[in-house]
Length: 68
Image 1 (cartoon, rainbow, N blue to C red):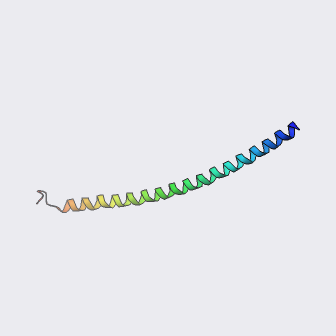
Image 2 (cartoon, rainbow, N blue to C red):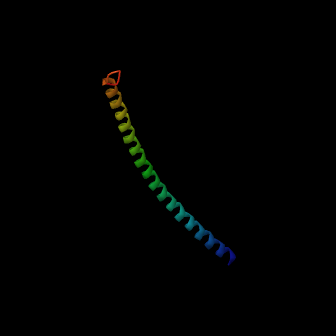
Image 3 (cartoon, rainbow, N blue to C red):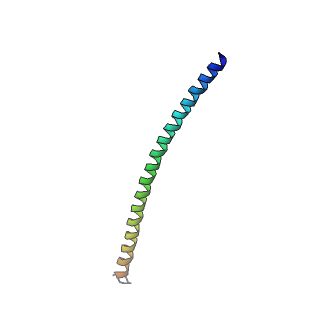
């Protein structure tokens, strides 16, 4: 009976491992989605920053040299 008990234990462990792998996979999907969201936000912020820098350059070009 020892071999049967070991086989059942091995099957039980394999099922637990499979469940843990599934849970990690789901967590990884969530992290990947969050990463894509952050990447989109950073892209928008970069675009806004570049626009602000360009507007500042245009405004400073229009100001007189002596600051008055």
